[in-house]
Image: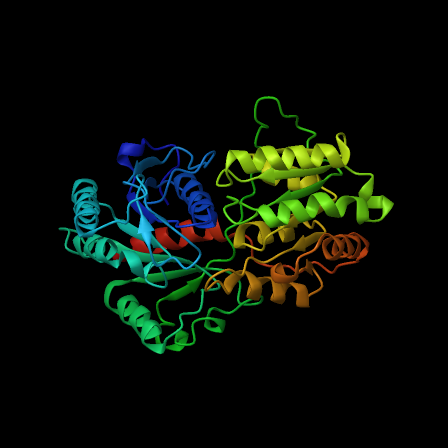
Length: 402
């Protein structure tokens, strides 16, 4: 293993490609993995194709921001650029050529694609040429997929076959960031047996940055004994925050007397944030804090009395890691299935209370919050060392190549 103190110019170079289209969970998980790779002695070039995420901590990695793209809605079929115009073939060709040029310039020992080939099919026109360029280097790069344990289930068998074909043809390793004791990969990828020789479980990639400093104006005691209401980037979270504001007065005194802190993601528009602040102040000016999402969220979560959130990979695993009573409202818009399945499996173990997004009310959320606070839990021993384990796995694979 390379000494982490070695000059970054002398370290083995990894190119990590990540594209988020709506929520920021993919970026957050990739950033956590990037910090672990840097700590393990790699030099990472973090290539992002999504819109910049405020407060994203990639450590000392070199960050390359591609011309960004995002989905226009929850169905992810139409992508637009910074000007709001639908991306065209010329735009795609420019990004493809940019990625190929990065590979040829950096000569990485490994290329990691976050989610692809198990998702991001819309961007295969740039990812496949990038991977092909990496395989064609004088010293071919190790091609690695970094994928969470649960996929959004593709609607057609042919799509699964396409994923399988690309994995077999292009990839040397598929790192599944999960623990089969909770969710085996085949639960949402039934063709797992046909690619099992490539797959290695790493454990969950969990942000353990409990010592992150609060932002200016914040306190290291923020979150203590509070109810934290969060939703990641917040693009589809307005209903959750409004229900939480109304729910506080309906909960038992054990919760109704606590401060409720709403951490509103940066993807929710400023006018909505302002209106949430107004409504909360009218309900109880001292009982709520409404502010933007903070980089010290994990630290605050570790001090909280209760978490109310959606059910993305990062937040749900951070809840389990910190053993915090929790209510989750899985996002289920468009073709989304991942959050609902994850929440259901965790709820089966008695670890969280689940509220259906389609039937979300203040009354239902309040009742779930009271149940979550009162429940006794037998917290599981899941593998949460996925970031460091991924770095060790890559070191071993590269060493085996000689």
